[in-house]
Image 1 (cartoon, rainbow, N blue to C red):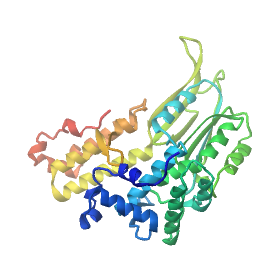
Image 2 (spheres, rainbow, N blue to C red):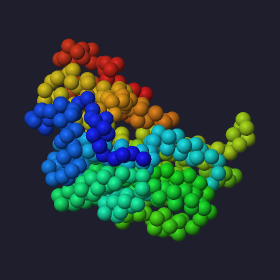
Image 3 (tube, rainbow, N blue to C red):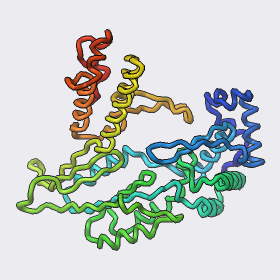
Image 4 (cartoon, rainbow, N blue to C red):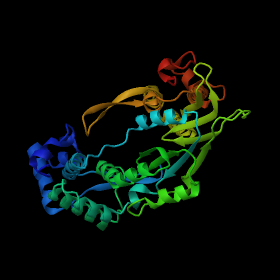
Length: 387
């Protein structure tokens, strides 16, 4: 059992950039001094917490701006993940398994659920009561978490603040039992959950309305599904004389899945279903919007180097350092959408980028012609969408 929130744990939670944070630069201290400030938070509570709301695509997220509080929340996060054995879902693994299941040449029914306002709707009080019942979690950790929840409540922040790493861990803890109960339903063939996006595949022998009601009743902590995003797709088995074309389509975790009729393989005589996987239209539109924003900025400052860097960031693949773990993470189109087997969306993005930069009707094309970096009116290799 972990000894709880103590000096040793807090020291291990310090990252290489913590002492460069604005609040520490304004009131300097070394690592030992930072740990002492964090210990004061544990002892006296979160009244001095500096938490800033930020808007991200219509949702309110929060960023912790006070380093001692960040350190305490990191310590709580480590304790909860170790004592409760919380492992966040891996998006790529989910997609890979989903493609395999959908490709089987049998009858399936796909259910898609989305939890409405997941982080904001989760009842933190009920969650805290559940955490008190876990003997492996040190008592001072739960007490500190209770003080944190109380401060959030006093400031009018409902549920768990979106964007804080600890919130993601707590949300996984909150839905552990729900995931277990879903997997035990007799009709479930496959199920996965990535934060608040849930997908379930059955053999299509159950009553769809009753099944949906059963899943809804299993939601804990006052959570509810977003009915507008709930979707059901029936995928039939092989039938003679079946029509060609798609039999179903849905988007999940940034991908679009297009299911074709079941066919018999000419090589092994087995049934299988072709599944087309591409980037979801919503994500394509978002990338196009960001390309337009990069171009608009160029029209203001004429900084071609910055434009190329922005487009590389949007269309290429690169490594970024995760300052919370110190690890390097590969990000970009290939990393985010490595499971696509149809390049239609990438071709669409490539065409869009060309039309913006060198198209006959592009306002920016003439600006490029005047720039020595872009003489010849051709797109440099660094600006082409990677396939």
